[in-house]
Image 1 (cartoon, rainbow, N blue to C red):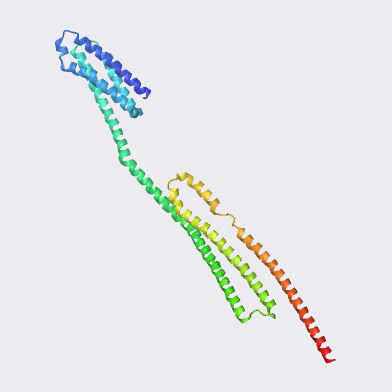
Image 2 (image 1 turned 90 degrees about the horizontal axis):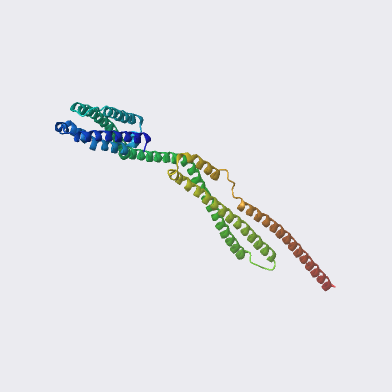
Length: 330
């Protein structure tokens, strides 16, 4: 409790004790007219009931009464009452009437003080029961409006990521389709080749070379298409996840204080923008192409040697047949 309020209560207790002593002196006197007078009875009621109520009022409303205006009014009224009590000189109707006039003045001043305190309480109750809920509701609406504004501001960014994810998925499907076309084309090519160019002793070299070449092309391009499709699907997943996060961002920020929004946006900018692309699949595709080029070079070299060996074998057979014919003529 405020120290000044405690001082006022002590002053009231002192006034009460002095009045009680004065009342006891009158009651011990033989002047019945003074003891039975209406003003004396009013003085007793004030001393025994009113002063305790005022002290209770001061204790219960100490938090409000600490304001300077209220505190000054309470101090002035109690000081005036104390001056009247200290000026008591005799036990007479006139003296009691003087005290009652001071009591009436005290009651009037405290009535105004009580009304002021009641007005403050009512204002606080009004704020707590009516205005504060409205302010809370308004604050929620402001948050909703801010969320909507942020959603509109971020809609363009979210749209970019959503469009990018759709493009990645579309390109991935194109590479899937190319792989299936390649697979079907190789099967069709092999079937037609077997029907119109069957395996024979004279065509076995070309047959084997065409099969190896077809197999090499199918493996190379098929691996390339599948890896590109896988890489694009991974980019699609990342872009789609980013799009979903940006859609949910305004709702997430509703529950976070506004002063932290700039820090969150900064962290998101570092996360979403300027990050390096995953080059793993591109590196693997490059390694694959290099390996296939090396394998193709070896295949060409082996094919050339095989053709040359076949040519030399054919020349030797021709020479042998010519020698045999000359011997038969002899």
